[in-house]
Length: 197
Image (cartoon, helix red, strand yellow):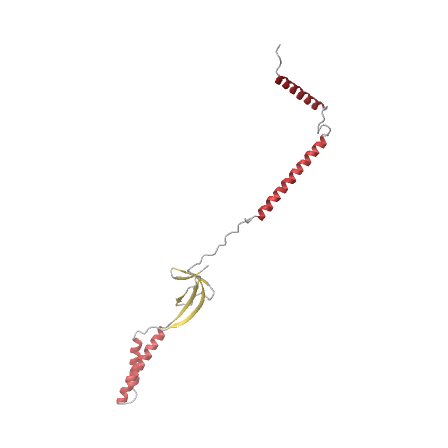
């Protein structure tokens, strides 16, 4: 007669014991941690466990936030400061000056003045005195006629002094009174002064 191998006997005993324990557990013969608890008590324990997990998660999130606040890295990056570009042809009127510009003499005034002065000088005195008076009348009349002609041709000029954003300044001349006043913002476009709107 063959003998049964000891391992097979051990395995059979283990299966019988496991089946017995399982049957005893299902029938309530074996003490169980949940065997004597009601469904309400089990639900309450599960709810408490869930609340504990939520509280732990909140604490962990708060700890991470505090750690991030204490790190050397700033929480936000400030926007870079933008500086306005300098407009080299933009500026401000510093002053508006009015000047009288002497006109040019064409010679007609000098000739006409000399003739009139000579005629008037010729009527003064007699002999050599008459010649001196005529010559003086011609010279004086020519000078006076030239001055009168220049005065008639003279004009008023308006100089607008502009200081630009780059620190330079320039003067723009006009034959009629411009609309700009000191403090007005202006811009140079094609060498012409315009309002900077």
